[in-house]
Image 1 (spheres, rainbow over the protein chains, first blue to last red):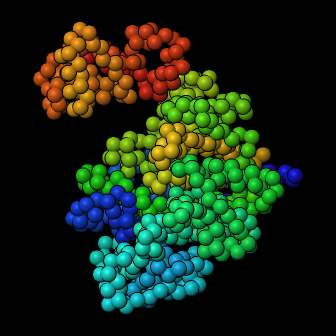
Image 2 (image 1 turned 90 degrees about the vertical axis):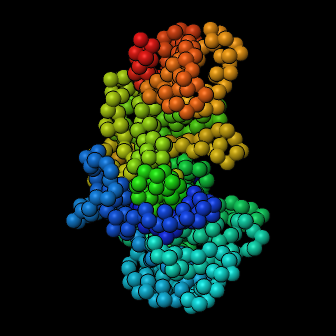
Length: 481
Length: 102
């Protein structure tokens, strides 16, 4: 069998401002069902497009502002005026909700989504003119008059679509099957949001890396968080192929890799192994956005008088290809896994997925430039009593490295600043789990000074009630020798 | 300390006798360790639970304290708790509890 060195040829990310969709996040939906006045409270605390676009963690996510600015700018990061200009080339766009909802309708090949014709008239010129949207906007959605839309909503066989804080619905999504809990309008909307956001991340990847054309993508691995299926198989899957189709990668096939928040790392490792073995030449790993996680902590934010910061959908894509003589190498010999017999406690997990591979590769903390794991924005989690997740993880990792003889105790104090990454990612699970850093890693390992970065992610398997275990995986990216 | 736990500790102290009870804390930081210590010794400082105004004066240790460490045994302690103690800055918790006892 052939052997090719797998590299990260490129990576992209997108953010979609989605204030009108926050109401369909899992927590807001349940709260509003229980107490309809919650919707008003929520609407009053949403950020405008400009505010969300200027929000420092969002700018860092898209690569417009250096990660170090998170240490330099005091919190609160919200409510600050927009900077005059982008100071760095971005990894992808900050996308407006109206265009996104238009694309959701276009991605719905079974026409469960109908848009108000006036809304479509407003947005279609933009969808057909903006280079990022153009290839996705080659068809027309199902359109309805205002009266028909009102009549459909009154019938109640689905959910209405809104943008921003406008109380007038601009569309409608109906249940695909009356007796199928896997095909309700809420589930379809969730899955369509993943499909569109993932396709946008793939399109960004194609636009920003002309060496990768649509026809060159052989295989797409989706590490998103949805479950596409029907009543006979709830998580039937292969959203990856739907994304490949929508993004125009006509020669590609694909599959989904599931592992709660940790899925991006197994997807990277699988993609790299497929390239390494010669099975495929170009693999794209993509994580689409999570609708259920919008507004997850909104009650805490309302209580503290903050804006609802979980108002963006996030997606990222990574191109894994054969060695091109310059791109960061995915070191398959470095892969760490979390065996069944390892304990579920954080220190035990980190011993398995970080310390063990470091032992195997004879690495010390000094030989790793960056350890990267869950990068949740602390401004979202701290007010919700969830603490600063990156800080907590780095404290534990530092202790594990000291206990394992990889670092001196005196180096613990500033470990996160020297070797870690502060949180900037929206609380979109898998996106925050190292995947958000991939475009940064590609930049640091090509244009920057870094020698390598150690990515790892953990998964709370117990949430699915089938085991009390967790899982995790790690892999080392290294600058091209 | 949540109200249910306070109630349970009060019950145990009444049924078993205060002198026959030791409280072992495992809180992950100084603040929560101090609140829990206060609750089971001098009474609930938040004035919201069954131990409000009840001075149980129970013998209370954090699992990171030398006395507990010695009881668990060095090797076993290092295996189970050594890394946690480092990560959670156990020495600051121990110091804070020593201060609270004075």
